[in-house]
Image (cartoon, rainbow, N blue to C red; front, top):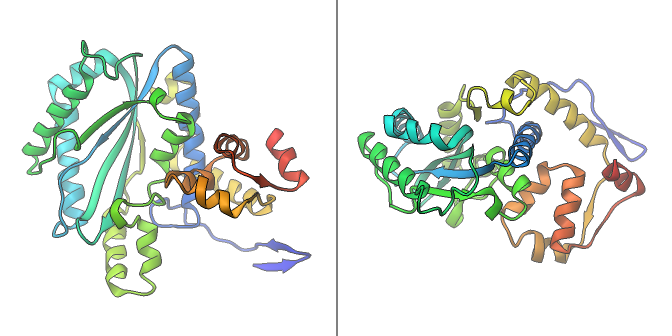
Length: 311
C-alpha cells in the first residue's frame, strides 16, 4: 500500500476468498450475501407471507472440542430435518429456508455452536396457539439432540421469532446470518476473529484458532434450500462469484468517503446494542444512514458521501 495525495493506493493484492478465516474478505463477502438475503426477505413479505428466525443450539462445556461439537450438532440437525413429523409440518407452513452456522468460544463454557435459520412461510405463525410452531420445533429438536448424544434446555435450545417482531428486521436478520465471525460472544465470549486477534499475545488462543481453522475448512457458511432463490428471483451466484463481487466491493470501499460519527453517540447509542457496530460494518451507505437516523445519532461526511447515499 502506498500513500499519495492523502489517498491509499493498492496494487498486486491477492485475495483468498475465504469467509471463515480471512478478516479482510469476510465482511465484504458478508455484505454481498446480506444483499441477497435482504432481497429475499423483502420479496417474501411483499408477497403477503412472512419470515421467521429459528435458532438451534445445545448444552455444551469447555471439555468439548470444536470438531466434536460440530459433528454431533450436524448429526442432530440431520435427524431433526429428516424426521417425518418435521418434514410434514415444515412443508405445510413453510416454503424454504436459509441457514447459517455460527461458532463462538468462552473460557467458562468452551465452544458454542449454533445455527440461525430464516424460515420463509405463512403469516401469523409466531405465537399462534392453533399452530404451536414454537412448541413443535422445541419438542422435536430436543428429541434430535438426545438421539445424537447431546441435550438442551427447553426454551433455550430452540428459539422461534417473527421478522416483524425485530426492529430494523431487514438489516438485523440478514446481518444475523452473515456476520458470524464479528458478532460478540455472550458473557465475555470471543468470536473467531477475536480469537485470531488474541492469538498474537497468547499461545492458547493460537491453538484455538488452529482448531477453528481445521474444523471449518471446506464448510459452507450460508446455505439456501433448493428452489428458494429461484422462487424469489434471486441471482443464482456461486460461492466463487459472491467472493469476486465482494472483491469489487472491497476496492470501491477503499475509495469511498469516510462517515464520521460523534464519539459520545457512538458509545451511548450505537454500542448500546452489540449488533449495531457489526451491522454498520457491512450494510450499504443508505442503510447506515437509516440506522443512524433511527438511533438519533449525530454524524457527518463530505458531499461525495451524501451524493452516494442518495443514489
